[in-house]
Image (tube, rainbow, N blue to C red):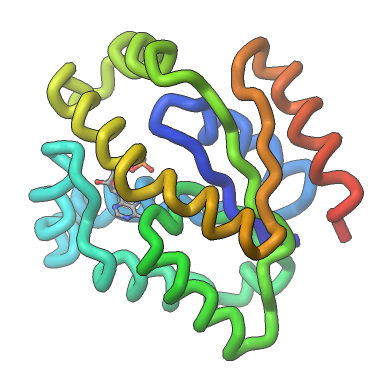
Length: 186
Ligand code: AMP
């Protein structure tokens, strides 16, 4: 199964993703994790990315698209993957479509985890990651609304979007998600 997991920061994607990759045996491709690793390793890409991450803005498309192109070519992705935090812009989604068209391996599903914005703010503020100051949190939510939310219409148009309510207990949400994914798993 090739899936995109989409949702605002703080929606609980990471928690659900960890369980989903176990259940469906998928490679977990989190661009946030990749960028944090690059930042901590102080690579050129990492240093460049940090200029954006530290203020809650999106890293430029070219950087992210390069990272994903290389990652998707690795052997563990051939058995299916979960894209977590990518694509986040229409340009990224279009680049992904082109890459997957070249290899004849289209997406199976785009799953949206839906959580109201006031709930997100509280969750993010309570999480206490170093980069989670109120101002950065606000900027990350703005980036989601302005740049990432348009993907919902984009993928609806392609008949790929499924939306799941992201409020409730972790187990409850997992049940909702797997109810949608089970028929697609192979
Ligand atoms: P995340 O852990 O997915 O919330 O990502 C943390 C930060 O990394 C984001 O706030 C962005 O600055 C950056 N980032 C991660 N994925 C992307 C992406 N697909 N496009 C642009 N920036 C990204």
